[in-house]
Image (cartoon, rainbow over all chains, first blue to last red; front, top):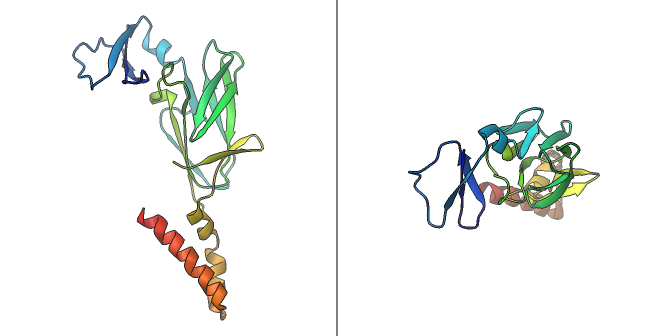
Length: 134
Length: 57
């Protein structure tokens, strides 16, 4: 059983396997329970770069493009946010990908566009820092 | 948050004014080794101020 904590806007804030009965909720937060295993629930939306997920990916300016893999089992497409841009990613057998350019330095933040359906934390969020080539 | 655009099927980070100013640093140093014109000096100072402004944020 998974406990899902939602913020006042209904966005998934976090989830965990315990029942969270004594969780200290902030104003407007709610808890719901989902009958699924942790791996099933966390695997509904998954972002990775070179097989790495849930951590900040470092790259250098002018290096090769970075491929971001998106996994969303059972879906034909999923919308992601890349900083200020909303992007629809086509999926084949629940998997798809897109490219990030390293032409300029800065930080890419990738997360699900639908925060009520998917959690923008852990494996569902990816930060890619492109560092300046000094 | 850095602004992103889509170009040739890839996501590209938009260059900030400070990044654009930083790009010209080698050229600016070279310009200062000669006798720069008033316009060149004004442009160099503007780029320095842009980069300083970014550092102070």
